[in-house]
Length: 518
Image 1 (cartoon, rainbow, N blue to C red):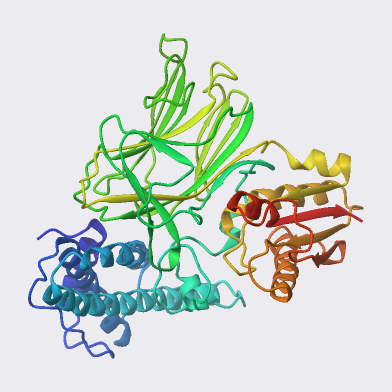
Image 2 (image 1 turned 90 degrees about the vertical axis):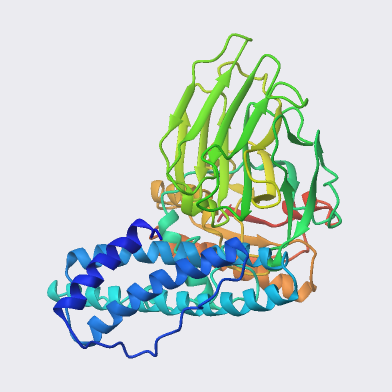
């Protein structure tokens, strides 16, 4: 049996301490590892890996109870282990989908063992965080610091599954792999376009149908995944393309979408990739005379590169690059992908990190008018990739000049969790630009006004719009240190629509925030 690298480190350290420190027991009653397999590969692997790491953390718990101090090397090992634990925990919802493939007996057995494994993970994550927190508190005391431990370090993991949805507890949000700590995104500089060209969350499509606003030369279907809503499953295959109804891309535009995976793991091929293609046609190929292709790696057993390749005037292109990146954890954790094209410049972000910034990737302007997706080398019916919330918008260059010159901007690029005032971290590029305007001219004061779509009751939407405006103010004050007396807030609910609330595009336009100079 082989263990992940970090688990091996914990094992080695645990064995050393076992010989040096006899008769040590943790306070918590030890969980018993399941003695038999279920017969569903992903479930058996998840259970085995969960208890492998649990056993090591359990030993650390005992050493801590005995008063054995942790040194710097121990801290490093535990921090690495925490990353593995949270990544493993976040893969649980994907694995649960495999349970339905078995018969009634296997389903019952798999559910029981998954519950045990998740209980082991919950204990391991909580215990690891507490061990790290205790050490950090000692370090802070040595430095005469009076700061308290962050709430995030002390929170107990519940069911971390990626992006937050309504009804989840604060603990769940704090332990989400997608960071809810907005300060991580404080330097995120992606700014979405301000003129919506295309949006699809598949809200109007029926489960099992191919989405109405896309085309393909193969197949695919809209699926509903738990409380995460509707997603479009792309099928893997040679020469298979998915083309959304996006035509005549402008010179400056942005593309955003979310990815969800299931069954991706150590056995996934190193050649498994999602290709995002800008093309000169809407046919089922990369392009005729011009295209720009960036592919994201999906494999998990190594850190595989992002690839960027362009092709212009039938004679090749100047760029054919492998860009070093470790996207393994992100791929398992519902990443948000953002792309900005500004004339010839091409930039790409995965969550808060910018991985590509090529100044002349688009060698010939105004010829790449179409967007395409291609997925290859996943195992059919075993490994799955879904896409949702595809948004294409014109602009995305600089809102600062518009605010200074016109005294007002309206943007639907600041996104919130559904029915909530929690800002999605990837939206901070716009908030950052607003902060730069306020820092440049300290005489400027702003009124922040929130708007919603028409879903839900009028009174609830009015309250939500006010809360969202207040959340944007809080981000400006707490992250970018803008004086609170320079900002006022208001909310208009659904009372001032600018789009058709019967369509997903119109709803996306109506969910917006305005910044108005006072």
